[in-house]
Image 1: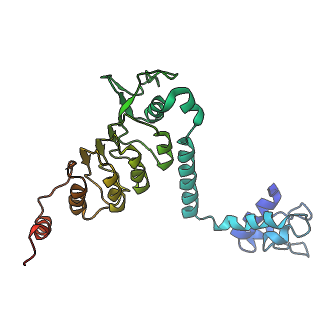
Image 2 (image 1 turned 30 degrees about the vertical axis):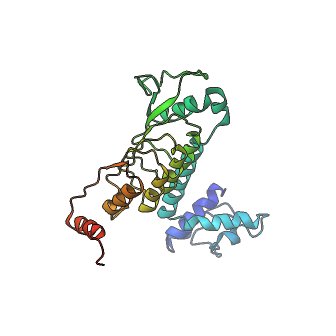
Length: 275
């Protein structure tokens, strides 16, 4: 770091024009310059001149030269990147947790501690975190705790967090309504529940596109899926119609089919070609 005298001189020499700069402290003599002195102080034009006679590494100087280029936009971008990295690290898969609790209780503990609520097979109660950070879930593996439903609405689940939702053999309902970080990659990972998942809610997930919804055809046991308020999909109604063709047993909710252009497009598809 620069000494106080060096930092003071740099600020004064840059901010104040001559002769206001004449009272700047000199690094060589450690005294103030006056107009009566014969020799004027040398103006330092760069950090390389300041450390020319010192054993300062090139890498250190390069980092110092980058400081003026850190604009507010870059600082905001770096801050966002750190937040994203911290969130992904916080939701990483921890083998010890799954070894102690088992897959169902481990997945339940993971989502509940992040604001979700869960339900187990044969239990009417929905478990969620209370004001005292208590969940009511067992702290060790116990038989009979098979995860049946997860309501993770408006939680900050990210792609890495889905590593904790593995080996769930009884999961039938999953609600991800309003999750800001659920994207196409997250939707693609839902195919691991293709043998059990029956109800899915993706409404309000602003990062999901039509490409992500195209992977839902693998969920052959789906009985209902909610797709409202997906701003990244312009033709949501047409995408919903294609899903209905791939999954005829599935009810598509949250989509308004009563639009003139959609009705016209649907009628054209159903009209047989002339022989």
